[in-house]
Length: 227
Figure: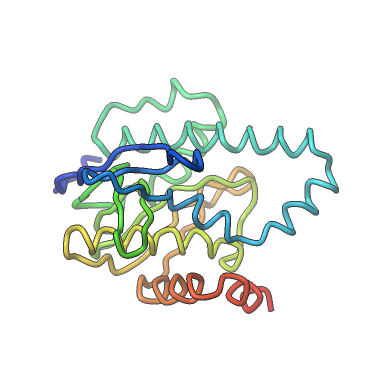
């Protein structure tokens, strides 16, 4: 598979640390600091279920699972980034797990075309946040924010609403910077305990509406989601 690239010019923004709070984020050419998208969502997201999960299995085991998931996701992301940049990728040189995950989701990744950016930092003055989307490109013919994820088990769509909020943030940034609004959010999830990967697609209009409600009242938004 050879992917076509129509890369946009990257904005003038770089990783930075807030001088007062120590928070990690980005800074534009004017010296304005932007909180990272993931931390902005995370600090507003209810973590009660995570706390209960840690209490149930123990702190040490929870840390082990978290670290393993982080390593798994980082390795697969590196492989996929090289793959969609048309760089050589040899599955035989991967360990068994990552080779298996890559082979599972490759057919879904091959539906990407006309790539605008890969792991390029974006920001929004309106939202006051910045972040680095995995990929913005055409997916099945229309512009999409594409996020690569890994998981042990299959996930219900209601469990990954925060992922859709993240893609809506990136879509707003892309529109603000380049004047083109992605039409859909695409989550490609490699699942360890399933031979079939997950493909979750949602209209960007709906994702943006959810983001607006989340920004307005995160607590109310999540209560309604859990009902």
